[in-house]
Length: 291
Image 1 (cartoon, one colour):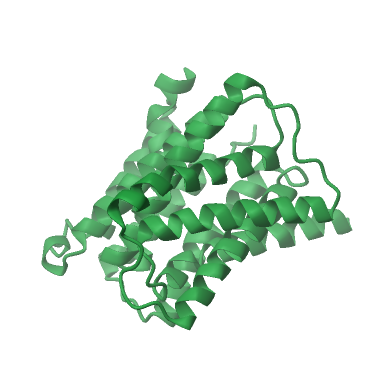
Image 2 (cartoon, helix red, strand yellow):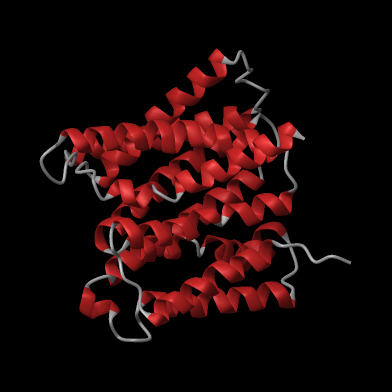
């Protein structure tokens, strides 16, 4: 009983932590590429330290094919972070988060091609509702997206969602290795992928580096990536899949609430309706129907 309760607490903590990433991004002057690179290195280091301290095994027999797939997924994840952090720069945390949570819809629509899965009426309905919600959230329906300059952020967010969907699809094809081994390889691959770009562009900062910015960077890498990932993966095997799916939506919901409370971000009635449609459709699509 205690183990199950602790698993619920860890998963809840991880999701609420992920939900504050956009808020922390607001106080970081580092460029999106440099931040994504730093996040990957710090996250991998923290996971390795935690596993070593707990005397847990890191390597669990990842074969050559799956290693290549994990490296590829890490490279895609690095690009995904880059676009997501850029989305936070050009639009509100709420809108960027909701764009990012179009990922389940993208996976649903690609599942017949990638996994030979049949698209049910329920899944197609959820996808349609989610897309309609995205139209409302983006401001296209009201004609405000271009006026407010947030369209660029919306496109970055949707691009990040497409890349995250790609990461999910690649990971589904990996059959060997443990979750921590895969995660460390992914994080290091994500970071290393961005090193050449940073060396060529020299784009490290968007402004003057402050003490607060450095502290936020360290928290994002250590807490939001390393510790939160360990909490997330440690809870997965102890909880029912449906419970994990439901609790996962604490991330976007908490992001919307906290961005309103802390950053005083405002959403229109259209935006709120769209948010309910996106999160609701994604949640319903993942819930299994009882016989």
